[in-house]
Image (tube, rainbow, N blue to C red; front, side):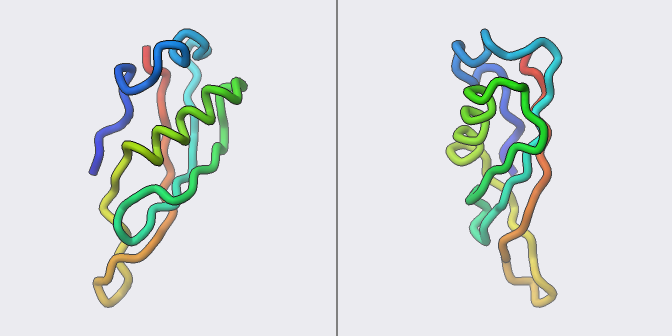
Length: 87
């Protein structure tokens, strides 16, 4: 539901350290309310501070339409997310 993170969402100090062209691949656990409850970096930038910042931003800012079970009830689920280089 929330658009992808843009350069303006990411702290300047993080942007300055971001390796050119690096995309971060994350797995996000989304609860039944559509809020990120867990973040796992599958392929990061090689800069732990950047990867940690992206997970923190996912917790704070990203919202999703939750998965539905066969009865149509919202349930937790995993979501793959790729964050391209913001520049």
